[in-house]
Length: 458
Image: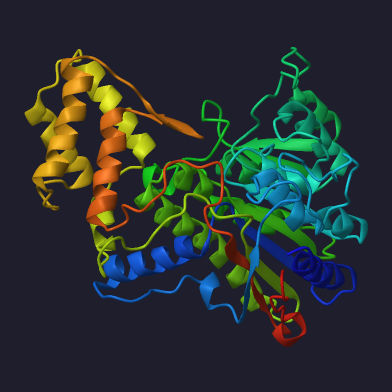
């Protein structure tokens, strides 16, 4: 794996520094393993075309592909910090490290090398700008949870464009002390902060450096899941469009742009298959922005798609030679979104919800009974959770790494996964259940020069 990462980073550094590619896109699907990609393509085929097979994602059609093992320097199961550091620097490190080695010394990242070579640089994500994967490209900290300290590294890197949902700890240090807000620090360093896509368009022409985050009042930890998105919500595709627009204005010496589909991982932690497939499709929409740019600059553009690890151990088919992925189309919201709506129903009814009202609600939200027949055993499980939550008032929220869910929402998610024959989804895990994932899928006009093979014992 170490040699393979070095091979990938050597190729990317050489095309950045030696002018083989003027424009470099580096997409990272956090938690996106082989089955997340394959499952999305089969889901698309069933839902979009009503057929068995695959409807290829844009990036899955790129001409060069390989796989790699993802263990970190200290654990067979990597986390996003060690994985992000490996992808940003070509070096393995301990879990939790942000572009520092095992002795906690900074490691130069490919983004920093691109900046030094005269290119403009962008770091973007669908989660917070100070989260592990984006941080690994611009920050150097011994612990991924040092959000305030990571944010202070942002202006030190002096990159041109950052984007994501916001910042997790803008006024609180790692040791939980109140500190000056990071936003005046950004302002002093020459960054214009745009809140939302429209604000970006209003400010971008006069800004020298830009930080694009969500509008005031929106969550700072992440963009909404694609399945929950409302009109006006900031999207990863819009972020990618904005980054390309900003990085190509003025003197154009080329750019290096990292784009993370960060909530694939979050949905996998929650074992929420419908949401996972929608998130992979959503990242593919961002890849399409890069592909359209490639078509205008085919001899100067390199696009790399990769992942840092696989999350959730998603299993396609359990017990039978059968899949029913089209069933997932009837899930209208993420498990988190469904949980919020159940909480709203609980509040609106003063916790006096009947089983018939809950059945109507689940029929509308998940397609149960109206679109999807469910077994007696599945209905009994739903009713038992309803009885505990609404009759006996014993509400025990189901927890995963990034969310807490109403018990009925968690149960409904499990039932629809069973109907789709995805019941093999693992219980919430720290990270990867699979050792292998796509290291890179590459699109470049000189693909023969970029062919990377999986090395023995990598």
